[in-house]
Image 1 (cartoon, rainbow, N blue to C red):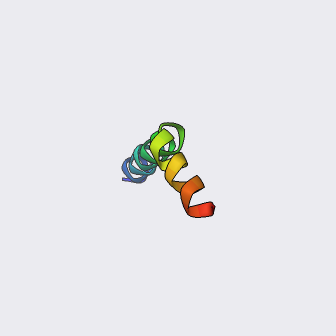
Image 2: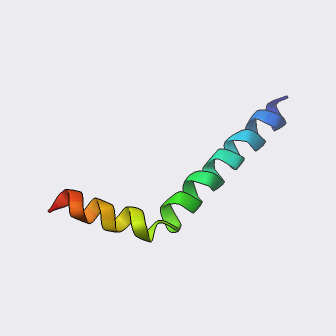
Length: 35
């Protein structure tokens, strides 16, 4: 039960990390918004 919730958090963190590491498009959009 605790293990499961920890795994879920890990899973969520992985998704977040992938979004942060991956998004060249998102980065470009952020720069456009910033300008």
